[in-house]
Structures are given as C-alpha cells and as structure tokens.
Image (tube, rainbow, N blue to C red; front, side, top):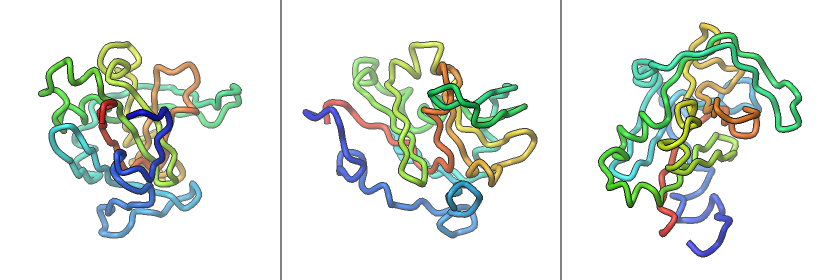
Length: 184
C-alpha cells in the first residue's frame, strides 16, 4: 500500500462503508438513539475466515468485565460514565477468525479496522493488540450497567480502555472488524 490514507471505499478495505451486516432480527440493524445507528451483530473479516456473530454468540463469548469507566473526548470533556462494562476482548475475536494461526512474521504486518455504522473507523496494529498492555483493553462491549446492547449507546461498542482518553477510539454501533495486510 503506497498511500498513508486509504478511503473506506477502497477495495483493499473490503468495500464501501455503506455496506450493512444483517442484524439478528433480519433487518439492517439500524435503530437506537445515536443518530439512528444500532448494531446487534458483528462481522469479523479475519486473516483465516470471516465470522458472523449475532448478539447471543457475542454475549456467550463475553468474558471481560471492568468498571467504572469514564469516556472522555480528546479535549478531556466527559462524554459518559459506565459503572460496569462486560464484553469480548478484540484479540479473542480475531483469534477465532484465524489470527492465532498466522506466522508471527505475517501477523506483524496486519492492521485492524473496527467500523461503526456511521462510518467511523478505529485502527489498531497487531503490535498494539498482541504486544502491549493496551491490547488487553480493546473490547467489544455487549453490556453496560446491566443492560445488554444498550440502544442509547448504539448496541455493540468498541472501546480501547488502555488509551489516555477513551472517546477518540471508540465505535458505537460497531458492525465490522476487518483485518488487512499493510503490504496489500
């Protein structure tokens, strides 16, 4: 890849940001209070396979818990407080999609993009997720303060709990995680 910036419309990122993964109820999965965007299912385009996980599967995989969590924007302005958060570590989902089976030399060339329904994208390198303390805090949240897939938060959310401020690298209404090689 010769350019630093890649459009979401680029074929190397798997197509257009306007693609829609079906929700568990068969619809587009777009309801809720955050600009009309909601997601209750997730597509993980891994290096070995593509997973399509509905809400029940994600809840079953959710083995990470923490709290309280203060989400702030980059300026430090508070966005919301979460008393208790439960979710699935992003690395666990990537491993289920084939990341763990790759040779280390290939893994180190990978970039992970987590995309919200509104087109917002959060990026991670393999190094961040697997070789830093930050990786343990990259979580797909399925429950917040005892509420599964809260509509006010867009349903599925990605949070990077190891970041200094959590707002810039959070994705509400998360619907897709795509793994790509930097060398593609």
